Length: 263
Image (cartoon, rainbow, N blue to C red; front, side, top):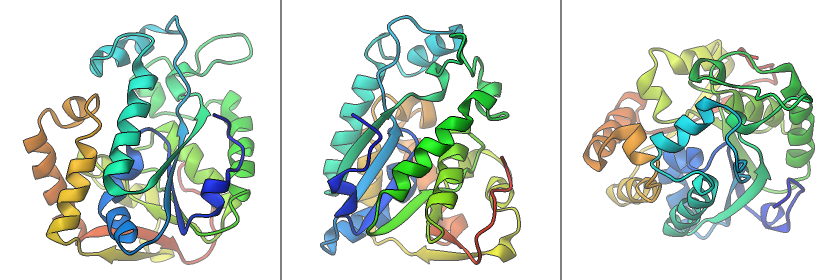
C-alpha cells in the first residue's frame, strides 16, 4: 500500500492516525466504538505497516520478533491481519499506509537508524526528517473529517513523527494519549503536553458495552497482548485503572497551534 491520500480517508467522518498496528485501538477503542455505533464512518489509518526485511537489519530487530512470538518474515503480515480483525470488531475501516517502522528504517548507507530500545525512545534520527514532509503531504490530502493523532506519550520516535506531521498538516487536529504508555511512565502525559494550560481535555465516560468493545478489540492483537500486558486479565485491570485515572477516555485539543515539546 502507498502513503498517498485515499478515497476511504477522505470520505470519513473521523480519521484516527495510528503509528503502529494497535495504537489507535489501544487508546481510543471506546470512542471509536461509540462513533461507529452512531453511524459515523471511521477510518483507522496506520502509518508504519510495511513488511519487515527478509534479513533483520540489527540484533534489536531480531529481538522484536521473539518478543512478539512471530517468525521472521511474518511479523508485519501477522500484525496487519490482527489490525484488520480489531477494526472489524469495532466496525471501523482499516487503512495501512505501508511505511517502514523505525527498527527497520535505514540511512543512505544502509545502516539501521534505531538499534536498541533506548534509541527507539531517544532522539529522532536526522535521516528521518524527510519522512515528516512525506507524512505532512499525506495528512494534508485528507480533506474531510476530524483527524485524531497520537500525543507522543512515552516518546517513541514513530509517535513523535506522527504528531509533528499532524500538527503541521492539520491545525484542527485532536490528540489521544497513548495507552499503555500512560500507565508505564510517571507524568508521561504531562511531559507530552508541555503545559496543560495550552490544552483543553475532551473526555467521555465509556459505557460498559463500549469498554468491553475496546477490550475485545485490543485482544485481537494476539502478538502484542502478552508482550504489553502478559495476560488478558492484566489488560482488563490496567485498562480500568487508566480510565479511572483520566476520568474516562480522553482527547486533547491545543488551544492554539504550537510546536511539540519533544522533538
